[in-house]
Image (cartoon, rainbow, N blue to C red; front, side, top):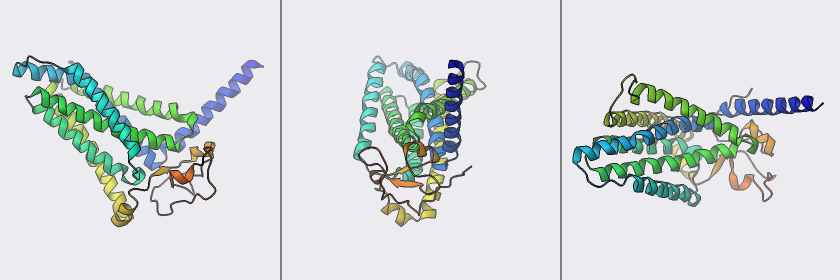
Length: 281
């Protein structure tokens, strides 16, 4: 019957998505990208919601007659787009240097938020916002690319949707604790941005430690030699697209992996020195 066929199809889709969920989030490197995605996106959403309040407070304190909030937002979008486009010109082994990049740029974000929270010059606060959003766009583009490499195209919306949902949950917590007028602390705009700066600083320390630890285990000389070798991370979910199984392939050169028809070249070889751990179940 039609109902039976629909039920079977729905069950098959749900089963496949559940398999994707388990295999994806049991892949250490992709889990780290997703954790950063959720927490960083929550921070960006929170900053975006309250940056106008900060600019208003700075303008009121300094009796600034000019306000270019809309222009700044437009320029921020343009500069961030250019930063994302610049990734096509870079050839970096993000699977190896990704955590260090996240740590360093999160530190930059933290510094810009601290400076924005303390400055009395509106133009400097504008500049800090441009830098903050540009670094986020740069990193989220890398994260999206690494995740998209590793999952089947049927799972893109599912995985990205989960990450975005987690980001919204974190944002709700931040709102309830920091910024809402009935929140636990109910801080003003300047103090809110100090909290957001500390939030980014925590992410910076976490990912810098993870990145330095991984590179130290592998060897700094070897890691520097591999710095410009662009790689992708393979997971068991890649089996649906013809990619090698994660048990034997953990990091593959993208140019060698895909042939002109989107298939897998026969001469692909695993990078046996990759130190990513995958919990197979």
